[in-house]
Image 1 (tube, helix red, strand yellow):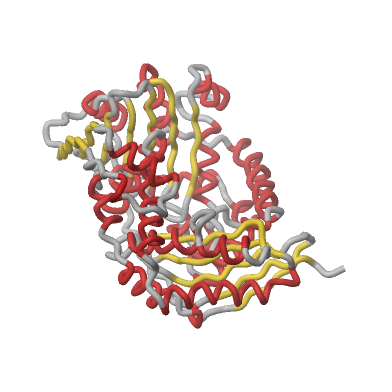
Image 2: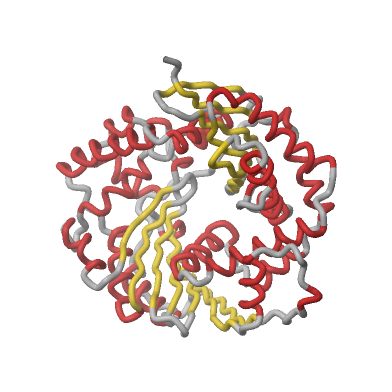
Amino acid sequence: MTAVADVVVVTVVVVEAATEKSPSESNSGGLRAAAIFLSWSQRTMSFRFQKTVLPNGVRVVTEEIPSVRSVSVGAWVAVGSRDEESHEAGMCHFIEHMVFKGTTNRRMHHIAQRMENVGGYLNAFTSKEYTCFYARCLDEHLPRALDTVLDLVLNPVFPEKEIEREKDVVVEEMKMYEDTPDEYVFDLFDAALYGVHPMGRPVIGSEETVRSFSRDSLLDFLSRHYTPENLVVSVAGHARHDDVVRFVDKALGHYSTVNKTSHERSLPAVNRPQSVSSTRPIQQAHIIMGARGMHVHDKERVALSVLNTVLGGGMSSRLNQNIREKYGYCYNIYSFVNLHSDTGDIGVYMGTDGQKVDRAFKLIEREFERLVERPVSKTELQRAKSQSKGAIMLGLENMSSRMMRIGRQELYYGRYFSLDEIMDLVEEITADRIQQVSASLLDTDRFSDIRLLPERS
């Protein structure tokens, strides 16, 4: 076991309590989310965030919440689909699948049963910039959860027969996404926005690349990217930080970089706006109007989040009220914001009748213009901020959400943002700042439009 005497330790003990407001200070336009936020504000929340960096570079972050009986564990690897070469497209996602097919310690069926046998849950996901393996369970089974998740990261064996079998599984997953138009249209959007850059490719890759993967290529990719400095272990719930560190140090203290290579992410070039149209044997048109936005370190990212809530975040949003409720053009419409380490995108998704597509785009453009031309009202601003706060507070009731929150914060910022700090950032947003962000981002000349249309009979 590696000594932990030289570790870097950061501890934040947080006691958060907002001042109770009188009814006269509350905005009359507040949503249910506002009431939720106020009820939470009247309570005192106490928890402890701690961070330890092991000598080999593995980072351990925990949020101890003594009042619950559950715990959520995550192992985050700072590698995603954007880190793949063109011939490796989909390899991160494929490795995510393959680690469940057996490790040096367990066979495939033992992995599947290990958490379920104690009423827990085990899963994983891959994004453009990171891969996460996670488990949740009762606090008494924390050692089992940590052992299982870390075993997946550290000891996969990639059986040859399972590799070939899993290729068929992933190809079927591709077909499933292609048969889901409200998801497939986002692949078209990414390709239009980022072009040939890895950010423009689907996380899952293509059938051609996946079929080409070999055991040697998977092990080579693993050795280059699954390194200690790329690994973050995050735990939230009823768990003591020192216990987690001791366990992780015992499991990963000997973990070292075998095949370290220098890898720097390239910034995607800015493509000219595109108009992309494709057809499918579907009943409804699926459209996106979007453009490049902000990255995770942009100082106005919180203002953008509140703007997103005003524009298309819920039933009271402008898009929903004016395009669905007023005109009846759709069942589903929303705006979205994606923030990455050095880039990002914003846009609006909508499902509508194929004959109404052009009119729908004009209505969306009109909402953009309104946000650029006039500041939002005090009532609408307060409602959006209360809605944002309420969503954050509701997420804190879920240990998996808290685990993912601190894991992502460590990956992107290398620091912890307390709840009070986040709430203050939201509260500081003004109508002028939202208008400024709208003016910089909602220029319709910058936007690409993507149309996935029904085939004509």
